[in-house]
Amino acid sequence: MKNFMQEDQIIEVVSTWLKEVVIGLQLCPFASKPTKEGKVRFKLSNAMDDEALLQELSSECEYLATRSSEEVETSLLIMGNHLKDFWDYNQFLVWANQLIKREGYEGVFQLASFHPDYCFSGAEADDAENLTNRSPYPILHIIRETSLEKALMYFPNVDEVPDHNKRCVENLSPEEKRRLFPYLFRH
Image 1 (cartoon, rainbow, N blue to C red):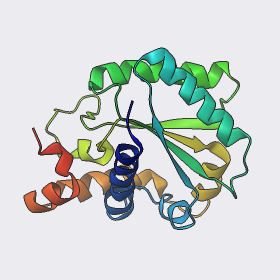
Image 2 (image 1 turned 90 degrees about the horizontal axis):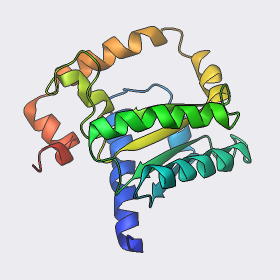
Image 3 (image 1 turned 135 degrees about the vertical axis):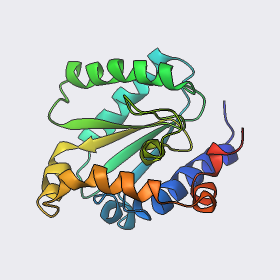
Image 4 (image 1 turned 30 degrees about the vertical axis):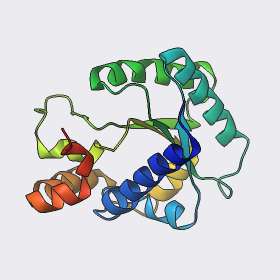
């Protein structure tokens, strides 16, 4: 179990990633507003196995479902101790999406996935495009469907986002990559 200081440090690292990478590089056009408004919830998971993590995901969905988007827009469930292996994480996503359906949250929430070793299907592990979903810790981002629909009204060219993101990370210098993704260079 982590002590309070370590939990704060993990949340601070993820918050910095959100601000400097996701928002700073404009990888997600929807992230800036709720972040500035303090409506992003950072929830550190203490789960050490899949069953406990599924329970925490269920609780986090319930938390969001019982609060308005005016109070909390979205949630980042951060795994500090579990699913460090990307293959295991990817397999867990199947269970996580089944939980969303089983608990009646399909059409209410959707999940976005981030991991330090994220690798898109068909990409090589060292392809720059993977940086768009590489985070300091494994993360499940719980997104309200209604918020996403509302945001899409203001971003008519949302289909261009993946190409923009790929170009953006491909154009980063080695120094920029080290500054923005220090956790990828500690090995």
